[in-house]
Length: 150
Picture 1 (cartoon, rainbow, N blue to C red):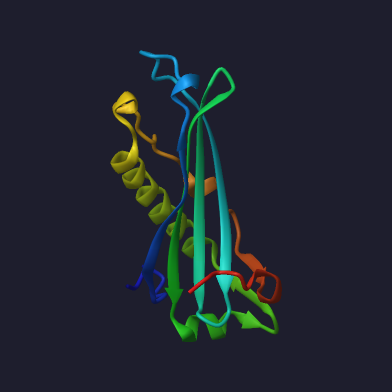
Picture 2 (picture 1 turned 180 degrees about the horizontal axis):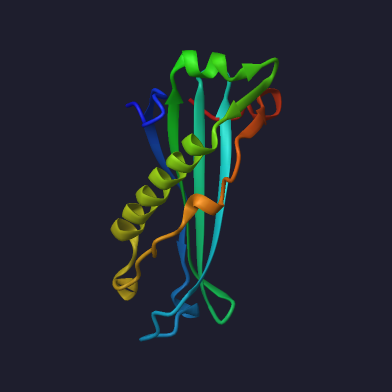
C-alpha cells in the first residue's frame, strides 16, 4: 500500500495483546466510562517492521471494567527504511506515524466490537483525535528497539 506521501508499507499482522473484563466493577445501565488511552511503538530492524500498539482502559468510579490492547504490525518498504536510517537511528515521519495510529485505532475498535461481552453490548470506542499524539517526526534507536517479533 502507498500512502499519500508515497511510502510503501503493508499491514502484515494484527494482535490482541490484552483483553479482560471485570463485570463486578460495572454499574448496570451506566454506559458512561472514563477511558485511559496509550500508544506504544516497537520496531524490528531485521524485518523492517513497525508495531503500533494502542491500549484502552474503560473505568467507572476509578475501577477497571474493560482493558484492551491491540497491535498492528506494518512492514515498511526497504528503500524507505534505508533512506530514513542513519547509524542505529530510524526517523519516522509524523504523517506516517499518525496514519499508522489511525489504522490501529480503527482495528482496535473492530476487535472490541467482536470480543465485548453481552453485558457491554452498547459499548463503543469513541472517535479519537490522534493528530495531537505525534506532533513531529520521531527517532527510534534500533539497537534499543529491536524487539518486534516476526
